[in-house]
Length: 243
Length: 182
Image (cartoon, rainbow over all chains, first blue to last red):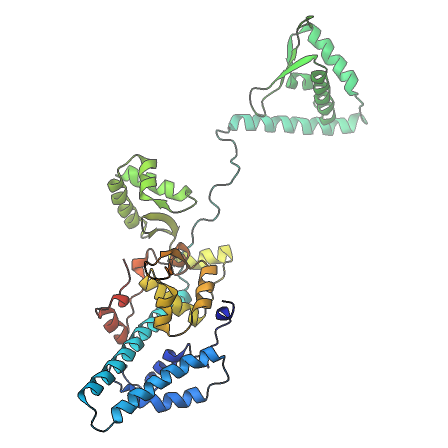
């Protein structure tokens, strides 16, 4: 199996015995339909003899055809062949001629395909198709613009603060206490409201960590209707003995 | 009918792979026969645009028009297909006679074609399409969507007819192998 996959040897540009024979016919400007194939035996043999050394398999293929040509030639020059011999010779030559015609058609089709390839007139399909992860559908342009406004506001404040105060310090504990304080008066508060006071990045982070901590301790409930919605911080009812 | 045509076009546009008439019928709620009529209309309407319909058997898809290949190739940075004469001959036997076995190719070319068949398979220009019902059940090969694409053909029926006098004579010859299989 491995051997049969060995690289195919192209003999001086010939794709095999039929190709070589066809080449001879075309060189001599003969017609495949009318040429006496036996007459080509000598020329073909001369070419085969001139072939460089080849794997045995390859040589065999060339020799099989050579022997057929010689046979056809021999029959045609036999003195007074019998009718049966004549018929058999004709059949043999006819079969080979047919194969040559078939092969000639294939070569021309290959040339037509090559021409198409060289023209480069090919088509392309759309690559990739749908991405594996679809972004959420039904995006709200209004929400996007509101978010952008917030970012801008945040950026502006941050810059102002940089100029005014050199660094603030908040602790998560302090902030958690503040939120708990606030929730004693109100039953719930939104995350964005908690940020109104000082809309800086650091303040937002501390506030966020504070509500996470409060939630962990079971002091509050958190609610978010949809992805990227405002978070509502809700006071937990004062814990009941069995609640 | 225009509505159906537009719907089919839209489905083909988003499709990741060729879409069968049955799938188009299910997607649009139209009868398969109407889908086929609409596909014909779509094919005609697309003739002067940058996109074309491509068909293989019952399945359809949208591809770029061969005339636009230069621009698309430049954009994609795609390489032109390089293919040896031996592989091209093997490919032409399979393309025009499909489905064909290795033995069919070898009978015509007169040389072993294992390696060229492997090359064509690796480049996805041909694929297995079944087994022949004869001793040994040899593998049958046919051409692929990639083949149609590489040669800018809208379907296998569009294979170039050979125009030289010898070729024409052969194409007219009443021999089964000289005719592309429908």
